[in-house]
Image (cartoon, rainbow, N blue to C red; front, side):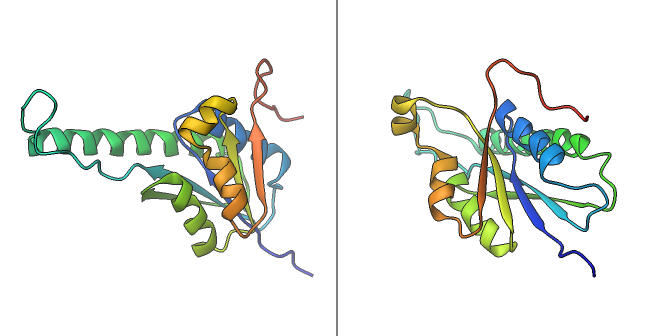
Length: 165
């Protein structure tokens, strides 16, 4: 009897925490020669709404906004390239990549539903109470709002990433 294919959604960004979560997932959740699909999701921030004038009275040109957009694209490419390198030795596990634009809190929840994720894996920045209250916690928001199980992987402060046994 064939095993059910699992769809494992991993939210990745430029932080060490998300790469650690992906690495942990690869060593503890994804099984070699399984029929799993690993979906690497990177959320680009929405295009910022610039006021017509900045604080000094200068207009933002289309060149500046285009430069910001190109930079955002390069960051996304770099994040997914780094994540895919971690997945290079997977056999029979399909790896898909997605780049979506929007608020990560809402976007990750929407994509988990849309892509039919069986589990969502994400890192935790480990913010304290004050920072979490001010900045909000993407992982907490997703844990409360995603319909599938959510695995939040916290990077230990001193240990190296997991290695193969």
